[in-house]
Amino acid sequence: MAEENGSEFKPRDYFSAENARPSKSLGQNFITDKRVIERIMSEAGITSDDEVLEIGPGLGALTFALARKAARVVAVEKDARLAERLGGVLAGWPNVELICRDALDVDFGALYKGRRLKVTANLPYSVSSPILIRLLRNRGMFSTLVLMLQLEVGERISSPPGRKEYGSLSVLVQTYFDVKLLFRVPPSSFWPAPRVDSVVLKLTPLSEPRVPIPDEAAYEKILRASFSSRRKMLGNSLGSLLKKGAADKVLAAAGIDRTRRAETLSVKEFGAICREAVKSGELA
Image (cartoon, rainbow, N blue to C red):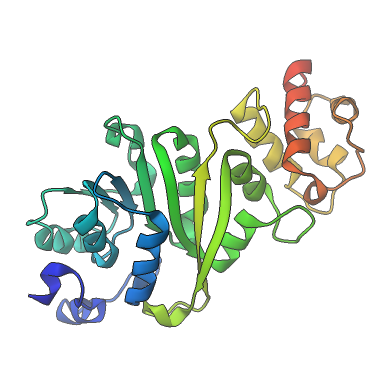
């Protein structure tokens, strides 16, 4: 049957047969363009030695391609309807493990069997940032991440300082990963078609953070506070996070003018702020 090899099965047929609709709240837009799938596979460099974590397999368009090449595929699907259907057609693939669970609740560490995993995912807009941060915090167990996101999110992640897209997520991801924007994906590559373009990014974990970070939790707090109000000068933005009157002292020690705004600072400069804040003990 066509659906058993995952190459011709159409999401529209499944939902029509079930008299159901894709979930808007889960951001369900299914990849139907084989060229996109082939390119994701190529960019991820999947081989017979690889173990892969796929987040959001949906009805398996990419899962079957992964299963044919990888030694092991762990697919995490939140929607119980889709997981049941996918589990049925994956029954003949012993190298695929299907987990019906929210990716935000999955213990990624429990999936690690000693070989770093490659990650592929089509992340819905509503949860892309929290999932990205969870992947980032578990980056030691991953070798490569090839992620499809809405264009707006992809531009934020890859943006350099000085652009309107540049924010706390840009700095955080670029601190721990090499980021490469691979290609755009038009709405016509999905069913149902989203209203915006998507983009595929490749994230490669660095062996060490791009700059020394003495406390990762403190670093995340500093980034969030710095970008909490883009119009504010950095000295004011950090005032709520650092002890009273300490923001100016920390910024001066880091060699940064308090009147600058967060979007003008580089990863290196944010690292310097974090080191001075932690060293001085001025975090509130």
